[in-house]
Length: 94
Length: 196
Image 1: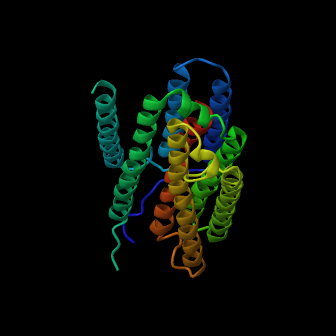
Image 2 (image 1 turned 90 degrees about the horizontal axis):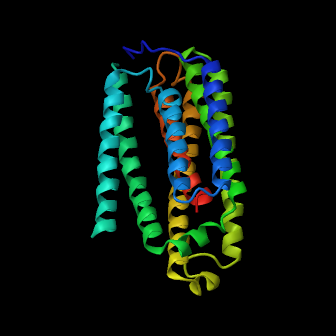
Image 3 (image 1 turned 120 degrees about the horizontal axis):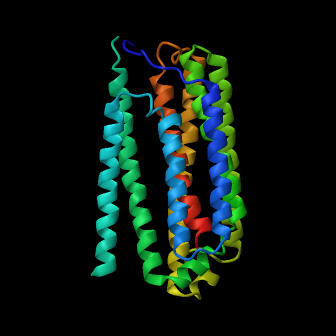
């Protein structure tokens, strides 16, 4: 147990993030009740991305970790995007 | 004994990336099926109970809050507070599973399961939706069960004094796994329960 020189995140910060997550959940449910056509899916994915960013940055401490962790995550995300994007392009335009 | 704190957490994150790719495969199946079947896939999606989905979203987000609080508590050496937060998280996990049980139970009762009488007579697009629904929420539910068990194991370690204010990476990594379960649900929820 050597280098645990970490930053303790206050309870208040987590409670505020939780409130934001609940608000975004209400927003995404509300938005889905309005018919926006194909835009519904994109809006829902946008709100889901905002929610997951809050979870990653605060609950999962990425905002407070060494930058290396954020870079690792972004690399994994790029690989996932390539995997999803290219497969879907293949399906659409084969 | 020397413990590599950063290394331990890095290993956990690498494992979480593999989980992202695992669920990524199911999301690509969703996108392809929606593209291929369109209306029938969406019609089946509208049969899910969005209110139960919303309820489970609120339960899981709150469980993530208590899990995050457990880490801050143990970092300050407050073992009792950390234990209470972990128990609350497990409680919410059980709540999530109960709602899921009700949801699946109702669908199965109506014959809406792979090979079920009702689903067998439906269009391919509807079958494809329900198959994916069971695989995706089933795999996610399995993660909820495993996450709950892991947190229970961490509770034992905290009570034994093996996880404390000076050595808590086991609790931190287990909580990271729990947040991943929440993260994946954040995408399952709108895609399966709302937008179709």
